[in-house]
Length: 438
Image (cartoon, rainbow, N blue to C red; front, side):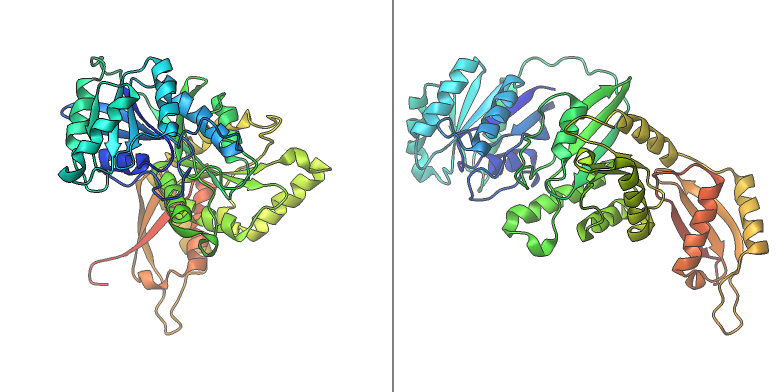
């Protein structure tokens, strides 16, 4: 599909316009300049045309700050892949020298440009739109992202200027892989190593990535959609809406993925936030791979590996089924094992257990396991079991008294199910159903 990028200086309402055009709140919107730092993609369909819309960070040419240097790199990368640019300015303020810098860059790119003079909330200020023509572009429209004014007209202008449609390629399977973890554990570096390009803005300052970023790569004939995410902090440490929506983006990224790489700092694993994030992954039925990054910074690696393995198993027993990877995004050590491990977990999420094995499991449970009771003579009974779905594997046990199936017994049943098949990295869901009348 064609790519349309929204580009402009900081704080002119680019993200607000992005959200308005895609019809949902996807980009972080805040009055603080520089909130959007990485490219953020959304899909738009208007009048039978589909295109990707890209939100970008505020472009500042004459600032050597580390963040603005990274943003300029990302904006230019977005521009290079764009078929059309929506150049957003503050229509009430009018063109500034910073807008002139953006206009100069866009003219040099040779890309077609639409100028959207934002914050024109009513017809009384429509005459201010004419000031935007001083930037040297022929197509100008006054809009209000906040009040939805003229946004449909802008969409009309966009689709009229898109390149001709090409035949849709055949659908290809892909594994959606979310890269999640606390700030500054190396998520973006890992994604860039896998993708082989500087796709996400990388910095040693915690919190650099605040939005989710998708990249599709082909590894040995398999398509992986990499979803880089904002670092997830404890809610008590979140500062205003920016951190809140970063948290929301992380959870939504987990919802969108098939498998999550939970990246932890090898020198500081098993934090409360790591445990919470692991719980979110399991609760949503996603596959999980534990990644211990910055392995190159530790001494006596073999001994440290055993210690870390035991620490994680002891402190996070609810993900004892998750495979471990020790790697260094800095040196590239261990990164080659990611695709192999993820493919294995993806296969395990689709695994089914045959009826004969399930029947044998029930016989063994009834014969050798201590079944729950209520202490008043009522005993737990299992009538039969069936696997109802995969991704994740889900089993329904039909019993006489679902309320007697306490957590410890459910953990025992899960262990028995895992002994029947290879479910490494995949959660297992178990439901208890009472027979009619019970």
